[in-house]
Length: 401
Image 1 (cartoon, helix red, strand yellow):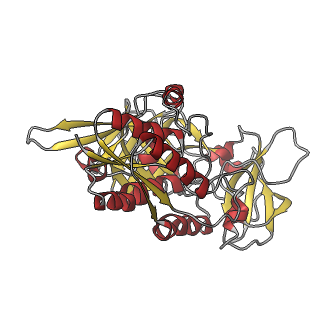
Image 2 (image 1 turned 90 degrees about the horizontal axis):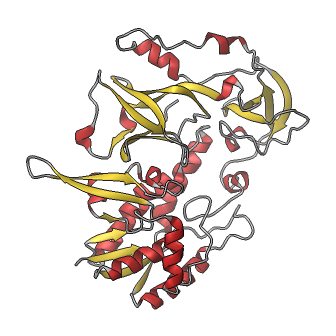
Image 3 (image 1 turned 180 degrees about the vertical axis):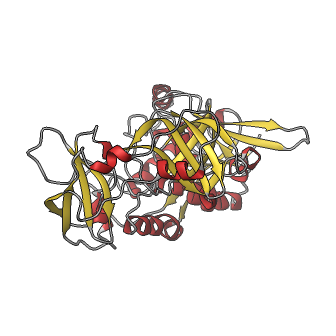
């Protein structure tokens, strides 16, 4: 049996993970992370980290396992929060939860666990890991989706490496959420009925503009409406159905986001900062009187202008493809990496909980292009696209455009 350090978060999932590992005969050690102290922008009713710590202590006592506490807030600020602010300042939409897993839970936290003599680290993620030995006797680790389709969290782990996966255990990945709740209740764990955390990893549910105003200043700008009959919508290139690989020029044209200028559309209101908005967003505009909701089509942080369209079927919300720079392409197992000129079929998602979408991936000198079988809504630069083969998460990358 192994020594396993569990990231006890004060939630039901990590609590049951710790219980299951102990039942399997492992030496289990709890480690609680303090990653954020500031409550600026946190919505009323969210429990701060000291409540999480109390629940972690109650679970550790019930399971009779030691609990250590480590403050990783400086690393979290540098690696996750600073990145998040920088991306929003550029008019992009980062995913701090993906960064938190790559940079904190399976890096800084892992190093702390190794100091405690850990063989493995375990979390309460709803995902699975398998191992496969190749012909040369080398072990390869695969990341699989969680069994519960409503809770699968593999997307959040899409940037993990082979070394990080080698050390990782996901004890509840084969369970459904109701089963996890049932086990917690049967074992009398204090977290059995505790609600799931929401919002930004380790920060909580926030009023995003208020949170971002810690560093990004409010600045009044204009809201322009783009009508659905804007001429360039009709001139989007169409993917040719003939045989043969598409040209780089066609892939580039398919993947380019919609760009508008202040000469396009009509001013219909004002906002307090383009960097507070993201593509596909419909709340927070404060502009009513429409049959359908207004959605953000594009933001321009240089001109401090946002562009909106009416209705979720507005053509400006939909795109057939996206691009990922070469430096941002990540393969869970590097041996599965595509070579330049190669194309493959995968199922892709561009946000958590989005149903997987069939697509073709094209590897080119400039990077990777993902062309979907059906146009996708709300593709936002800075987010992560993750591609799957059946239930295996094969790779991911930061959306360039």
